[in-house]
Amino acid sequence: MKYISTRGGGQPKSFEEVILTGLAPDGGLYVPEQLPQFSRQEIASWSSLSYQELALKIISPFVDGAIPEHDLQKIIAKSYSTFRHDDIAPLVKTGDNEWILELFHGPTLAFKDFALQFLGNLLDYTLEKRQQKVVIMGATSGDTGSAAIEGCRRCTNIDIFILHPHERVSEVQRRQMTTVRADNIHNIAMHGNFDDCQNMVKASFSDQSFLPDGRQLVAVNSINWARIMAQIVYYFWASLKLGGPDQAVSFSVPTGNFGDIFAGYLAHKMGLPIAQLVIATNQNDILHRCISRNDHTTRPLEQSLAPSMDIMISSNFERLLFDLYDRDGAVITQLMADAKVGSMQLTESALTRAQQLFSSYRCDDKGMVDLIRKTYEDVDYLLDPHTAIGLAAARECRADFDTPMVTLATAHPAKFPDAVKAAGYPKDPELPDHLADLFEREEYFTTLDNDSVAVQKFIADNISV
Ligand SMILES: *Cc1c(COP(=O)(O)O)cnc(C)c1O
Image 1: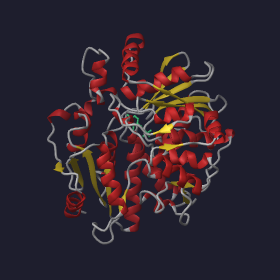
Image 2: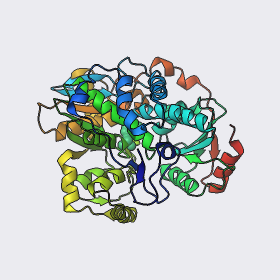
Image 3: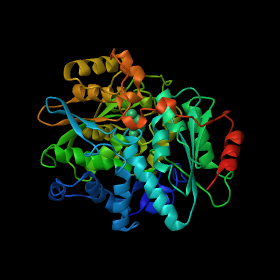
Image 4: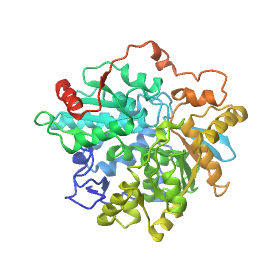
């Protein structure tokens, strides 16, 4: 299996090359040259597999021999052994044929553990085989950083540098990153906002001359193909639990960078019957405006109580557009240039194609807080703010009640106590046992200015492995 860039440039790349880098040299994102296809019969035969066994079936064709099957199996087993629920991704019923898929039983309590536990083990294995060392550099508004650190803390061939905006991530999120003590883990609290951190990372990827010879940067945000790939699995998992593949299932996905929901789109393209994919956004609603009325105009970013969805330009949307425009890299290059300067317009036919599968809804802080309250009052279930937005969208966009509607629960409510308190919940949502002493642990981080010389010097000076 080879991988190509959404901008159409360069030669097809191998699986290993793709997971060990960031963007393609032409600025595009890597996607598989063609998708594996599964028949209904084949999918049906997986109904009694464990999560790990199912993951092997779905991931194998993408890896396509780059890792021997037995080793891949071990990587998968190790990655999900850190989850604290036997089902890995359990389903909870919250209404009439309405379900929540809990994706927060991993070490850092957000769905990002599904991809980053796996990516850490995958990189470790690959680097060991290649006798290579790399540097991970990433920006985080909260959840990515802690999941990446947990995923890579034991990787002997990786140094990891995570930039977060100083004093602008929640205390739980910050502590989940800064209390991990290991020689290869470096937290940088950078003066500025998330965009400044993101821009610093982008600039460093495009000129890596500050690194010692032989080192390269690897991305851990969802431009990395391996992250998307790992997330396809739970769509199959949930469907199989709810009567699939004979029964189609719908999903509502709290969306930021469009990575999670894009994995659902791929599951559908690979043969899984999915009736609807609902894009749930907060007040930063550019994707909702684009899908519902072809308005992809950037507006100033607003801070919300669901901060992991406070994103203006969703990087993985480009991967969907690539398909909607019949994989024409030149068209995508132009569209992305338009998006960058403020507005991009889809053709009628591309929009219509998207709308056949996708619907969308915007839920602001008030609607979200109301639904958190209503849900714990009505069914005694505490939602995190992102999941609440997903559930609001599921209820709004749902086409029928015969099709199971699954909302992806992307985080544990204890990660976002502010929203839970705003909903009038009478106590602090409790952290699970393994994080119960989080507020007593010592923190380790370095505060730096928004200055590429300073940041890059810090990285060069602290490469340890
Ligand atoms: C990252 C994140 C999202 C957004 O996921 P994307 O793949 O970027 O769309 C939603 N909710 C939570 C809790 C997250 O951490």
